[in-house]
Image (cartoon, rainbow, N blue to C red; front, side):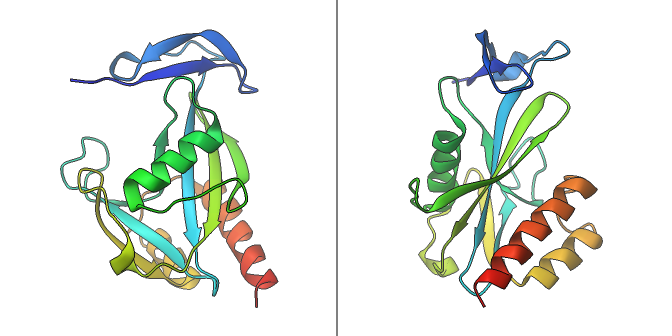
Length: 174
């Protein structure tokens, strides 16, 4: 079985010269690993949501963000681009995929990315081991799912800042 290695970073994202195995990850205070979330927003402001596979150990069957941990040697953009391509089949580059936010969590630095795409759900190439289904929803529907605990709870600050970024984008494009 293949186990990922993660780079150990300081609070500023600087590589500390060591890695950990995903299945044995232990971080001392002040040590972090890089995690990426990618939000796909349509040109009319809808949000693409995905439901995790029922076979996942962590958060099985939950509606959650596209993303995951950066593998050793990857920068944030590379990890985000890989996760987006693997999980949904959406290709990106430096002009289409934009980092909108970094949050410091318990032992991770979470970079949040956004990309504009109008691909219909039927055109996505879902990675079945990761993603059970995907759907487009309005921002209001997304907010309702979060409020009703029908979406993984990443915390109030996460959603407030994410909704602000999506609303700001939506306002610019109407």
